Structure formats: C-alpha cells, structure tokens
Amino acid sequence: MHTRRQFLKRSASATASLLYATAASRRSAAAEPSQRPVRLGAPVFERPEDPEQLALVHRKLGYRAAYCPNVSLDDKDRIRDIRNGFAKHDVVIAEVGRWCNLLEADEQKRRANLAKVTEGLALAEEVGARCCVDIAGSRHPEIWYGPHPGNLSDDFFDAVVENARKIVDAVKPKTARFAYEMMGWALPDSADSYLAIVKAVDRDGFAVHLDPCNLINSPARFYRNTDLLNECFDKLGTWIVSCHAKDVTWDVEMQVHFREVVLGTGSLDYKTFLKRLAALPADVPLMIEHMKNAEEYDRSREYVFQVGKQVGVAFE
View (cartoon, rainbow, N blue to C red):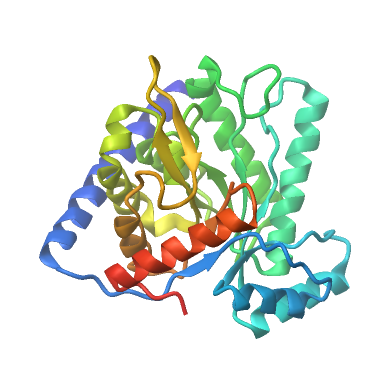
C-alpha cells in the first residue's frame, strides 16, 4: 500500500505538472478563451413548497443554479417534481450537501455517516444534481471538521480514497458525481493533493468540488490567490463539477487570521475566477454560501454580476 500510494502521488504530480504547463501555454497563446454563461446560485429565502414555483424564485433573482431542496430519497413523487420543475425553468441543482465526518473515530457513527453520504449521492443521481459533496473528514476527536495532524497523513489519504470508492461503487451513478470539498487543514488541501486523490480513487463517479477560499491558509496563498486559482483550474478543470463562491479577508493581529466575508469585500480575484469558470468545457455551477442573511446574499450576487460585466462573463 505504501509503495502504491507513493506511486500514485508521484504519478499525480507528474500529471499536474503537464496539465499546468499545457494550460499555461494555452492561456498565453489565446488572449481570450471561449466562454459560456456561468450558472450562479445561492440559498433563497422565499421558499414555496411547489418545486416549479421554487425554481421561478431562483430565476427571479438571476440564478440558474440551486442547492438541492430538502427531500427524502424515498419520496419519488417529490423528487420527480423537483427534477422536472427545475429543468423546465433551466435551473440546475448544483449539489446535495451531506456534511458529516466520514472519518469519525466512533465506528458506529462512522458507518452511519458513510451511509448518509451514500444516500446523498443516490439522491443527487435521482434528482438530477451535479454532485453530492462532503468534506473528506477529520481525525479531530470532538469537532467534525476540526484541524488535526492526522488530517494530512498517508493513512488519512488512504481512508479518503477508500471511502470515495465505497460511496461511488454502492451507487454507480451515471450522471451525478461524488466530490470532496477542499479544506485548509485536511486533504485535499491543494490542487496536487486533490489530483492525487482523483487518480487513486480511479472512478468516473468521483469528481472535484472547487472552493478556492478554503485553500487560502497562508500569506502566500492569500497574496497570490490569482496563481492559486489558475493552478486549480489548470490541474483540476477536467474534473470540476461545482464551485463555491466566498471571499476572504485578513484580520491583522499577532497571528495569521483569515475570515470569510461578503463577496467583494475581501481579496479573492473574482475576475480570474469567473473567466476561468466560464472557459471550462463543462457547464459548472457557482454557488454562493456562508452569508449571514438575505441582504449579504443580495450584495454578493450583485458583486458577481458587476465583475461579470467587467470581464465579459454572462449569467443568462
């Protein structure tokens, strides 16, 4: 296992270098890559029960993507209504979130969490969502997403790969994908570590969920986040199925303290983010998250629209 793991990591590193060099060459050769409209989405605060009316609420705000409405996998009629109602108004369900610790120390809880995420991927397949997403997990004994030295270990890598395979193999999705959300203190914590996981999992049903703000965990990444964005798209673009839109600022004190903020009030390079997203061959949703209220979501949405106009990226 150790030899195989090291081989996969070396292979992923070589692949990443080739992808990065090829993409960088294409960027320099083409002044402006071809672009498609970006599907922006966010939580909505007016939530009618009727799925078609809910889809129209999204369209009224300029959204063509949505988080999956609350529905049980056993409720086939409502799943059908959600799938058809959203498709009728061209609103894509970006993701089914299943936020739990797949590496929970307690074996019984860990099995329950694995079943929960497996059910989430099955729901994503049935409802027509692009993916089911969860973090890879944490070795922290109390906080399900907490930092821990074990989150960056070879054993963690192996467990992450095994869990992804179990989830995908149990569902065998044809259209939906399972993906891990990037984290600043747990694998995948970089484009290279995510690519190594993709290659190790080796399943068509596994893909990439891009949340660049979660990768900003050092001054270098904060100041050079344009390079970070380009690296992620260069190395992972083939597998990206959904993205999160957030922003980050640095609260200056005697230790490094980054904080999520309303879009446009932080330092993430949204011009590059939107241009690279619009240039992907796949139709990948961009989902605003972690705002405190409707007003912050409105401000974030308008900021994205404003930047889109500046760089020639459409949303309809």
